[in-house]
Length: 171
Image (cartoon, rainbow, N blue to C red; front, side, top):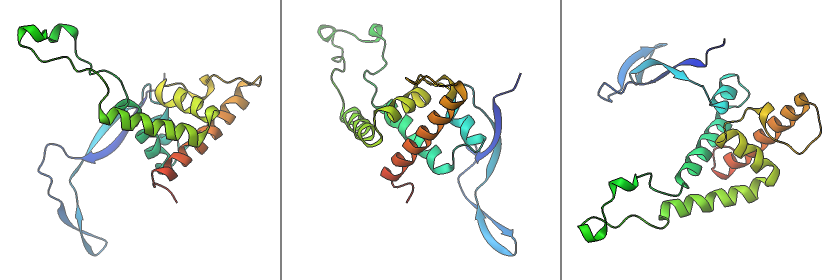
C-alpha cells in the first residue's frame, strides 16, 4: 500500500521569527529557520497532483485560494444549538444571516463560475471540494476512463489557470 505522506520544510513555529544571516555561495544571505515536517496528502487530490508535477505552483496556489474562498462562503457558524442560550435568559441572540465575508466569497465564486464555464466548474467542484480523483470525476461523456481523466485533467488545469490570472498569480 502506498503511503500518502511527503516531507517538506516549513518555517519553525517554535522559534522566534528572526532570519539568520548565513554565508551561501560567497554571499551573506538572510535565511529563515526551517524545520522538516511530514505532510499527509490523504483525501487531497490537488496535493497529489502538485507533488507529482501535474500542477505547477501557480495552479496549485489558485486551487488553494479557491478552496479557501469556498470554505469562507459556508453558511452557518458551526456552533452547537446547546451552546446558545435564549435571549430571554440573558444570552446573545444567535447569529443569523450572512456576513459580509460570506457574501464577498459567494460573489467571488459566482464570478469564477462565469469565468470558467459550467463544465469546468463541475470538474473543479468535484476535485477541489468533493475530493474526487480525476478518474472519479462524473462526466456526461461516453468515453473510456483514460480519455475521461485526460479530458478532466485538461479542463481542470485550464480552469485553474483562468482563476490564477484573475487572482493575478499568473501573467
